[in-house]
Length: 640
Image (tube, rainbow, N blue to C red):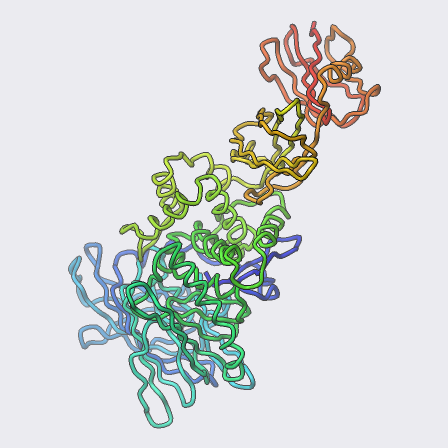
């Protein structure tokens, strides 16, 4: 989405709204509620084309013009057509087959147009709406007037629900417009930035008329205009096959010299993304930037609107042309398909050495942000809240790290190939996708079942904390890996983990272990004396508060410690006391097992003298299993 691009991480105590911005202050707007994006009134026709004709003077907060829409009814008995338009706008006229039609624009922002007869299903038709007004000021700036160096600018940013504020549109995430023409008249010396290719600039006395043509499918919220006294320059990038792509830049005149030194980052990121994910999806037209008054960026198709020029922001917004524009999330519940990918691709530029940011620091920042609160899922459970949709901690950072973990789980070859397959799927390319579509491509390419992964990491909330206990006997390292979770929605996060063994003389060896349950045992053979173990050294995992402890290497010593743990009374009837006062160990988990070794209950312990209630268990032989920083101890008792 608009890259409310958070460069490294936001060290905050509460979730932040991220609309692709570099400016954290832009994120501090409080979430506001809007209506869900399922509109039964606009789902009975297929949009084919818009001709958008406007007159805009950036000195005046106002828009006037007409929108001609070509559409195909998809249902029978089609005798009215509906668009969404703010009730604060004024509709002057609706024309259909050279006649005026009656219409109603209600307080619910629904423009209902009565047709003179029932239109046949599956047949192309068109309608033209003439309107004007001062759009309401909503969202991140659906239609905004700001100033730069005393010069006015009018710009738009419609994601997620702002298109209707300034033009009659259909905003559901199930119908892309096949193509558009944008024609804007504005006083000299202003220029107009928009989607697609600039076809003409017509001199009209004191005005100029700019005509942009875009011939790729586009979702409604990505249609945009920016109008001010832009200065213009172009970069060019060679593409495979001898073609050249123009990178067109509409910038504030006062920033022209500076911006010319910055856009090299876009060219380098474009080369990286072309190689990893396929050639830029709109290569027959252009890629471009247009400066605007928002603190971050918005990935308007073929022409990102930029609030700054950092390398990270450029990379994030460019990435959206693949993830968000070529393939668009089919529900705001799945916004991570836009924002998680764009954030991760921003990180991939750090990994590739583009710019000055450090890849490891970038990963650390994302993990720190995600684990700053115990809950929260990547899945958006409230699409009426703009703040929840564009939650920086969850939709951006956690979404990006989910992709990073999938890359670790699947391996680079399968992960990146699956991403290319997803982008090139004929059912998804230049259309919409849901999380299940991505999951299927990842599974098909890798042969892995990712159901548990998505249940835990996508739908589930929180993150794991790992406890690693280890000891060395000769050349064999024995590990016990346990896990606690920050949120009750997930009892265990399955993921492969990496452990680095560091020797006394600086030797290293890495081990990858498939961690599928808590208290799982692993072993690793090394040919050196291990001094320490580093958990997740390459930062593949979302985790926090991890512990790595060496336990006693002598079984005799462990057995000696076990004799100093006292259980009484034994046999016991209703209560059992555990006395750890004779030894100095940290017990971090205590389980009650039956004679067969099956878990009866997990118990809590907070002191070195603990009394537990056993009145609810049946008579018989039991084992009390204590896991500590000095090893695992088993003590038996009898319940009468």
